Image (cartoon, rainbow, N blue to C red; front, top):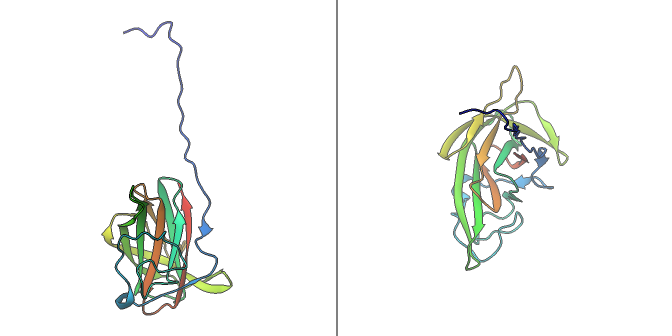
Length: 181
């Protein structure tokens, strides 16, 4: 096949990047794992300030819109070097009947770093290493010699809303930096 006389076409793609932003304007309170509530479908829109299933979860989660295909999430909690913090990423989609339905995207156990950053006026420690417990995510662990801020990248799987919830016994407050790619 000859390409003589054909006009070449060059196609380039560019990754759209949204900056990392603090997930919620107030640091959230962490329940212990025993106090987490199972997510169930609900007619109420999930928000970060209310508990859509009725108990033990209000104020312990961040809910954000998911405008692009992937979310980059970096956890921050109040316990230096803690090893018993768990982060849950849940996608929410609204069905034709108006019900919001949850889907677990990933759950990770986190070991915190020991160098704090100020988020919403509080000293919080970044997630240093992540271990995937359930679901799927790409893990980028931090390193104490280079950069303590590890993070995960999650395929949002078409979720309209992303919920990021934390539990643990060492930390009392948490937040997350969230960006989209």
